Length: 409
Image 1 (tube, helix red, strand yellow):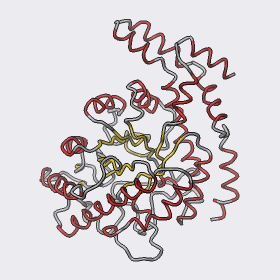
Image 2 (cartoon, rainbow, N blue to C red; image 1 turned 180 degrees about the vertical axis):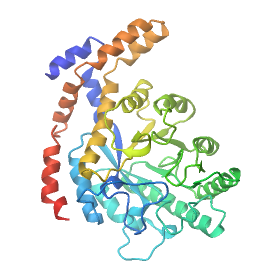
Image 3 (cartoon, helix red, strand yellow; image 1 turned 180 degrees about the horizontal axis):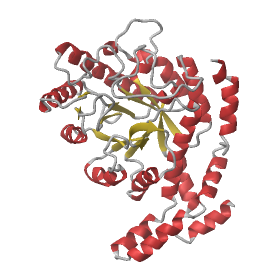
Image 4 (cartoon, rainbow, N blue to C red; image 1 turned 120 degrees about the horizontal axis):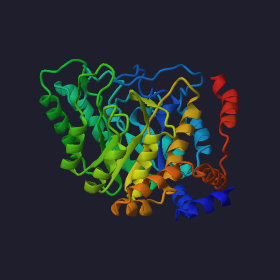
């Protein structure tokens, strides 16, 4: 069956063997927070900051050991190369009373050990939400000096932890800054909070770090629950600041207006940035962080990366959380969908299609595009899973894990 698919794609000038080789080396950074509904281990505050996880499916991880076990099960069902993506709130404090402004690399030593044993790098995110020091929905943009200083110190601490991960794993660490700051109703001053946010970021980034090992990214958002009228870290602010500081812009495809698509933005950012970063999610009406599926936008995002020969310039990470379904299954489904979309893109004769476009032959371009939609892509995916020694049917294993482990929590 694979040989049939191989010959089919050959008609379009596509080498399936080359596509499979590229895919197995394409890294996807897998977020840990799907496993426990974005709760973390350093605080028992309810989830806040414009974020909401819905559902109460049994089996949520409640300890670091449980989360690591769930991630292990999920990783075993995902082909390809992966990284672990951590939030600062997953610090393992062992009863120590440490604020987020004072966390250190040692509070993540168990996570480092976990990653090194699995030959994985680690990406990192400061956690500016679900904490008593979030005052009036503000952190780095707060007019309260004490609040702002607390979160500046958190950012500085996280930058040091990111470099620790990079040094210890031997892989670059992407550290992503996102704040939930904003207002529910129309503000009287839009400039002031953004000025304070800029100054706070400037102070955080005054900490020396190795820019060949640590990639600082800045993530924007349109709005959040309870923050509908104004978001400090808008797309315009974050892109402008990234350019101003020479850091890496990050786009989450749920953080834009409903009619905007990240796939259309990738080519523009690649023209002006050495690297860009993505959080791949699935927005339904708004930034609801649904589990990624093989939908049109996910495919278009990956096509833009592959068409522009930018796999080594784009950091791909997942970001979704659904508490209404089995959490391990959600992790596997989302990551496999990203990988499927990448393979779909790699099986496209992009050079030929560009040639057709440049020569004005839009008729043939349309026909080729339509024929590819029914090409035997699934047979190539099955071959990939076989070569990676990963079962196509992961639901059976997930159900067994639920019966043996999750249901007993």
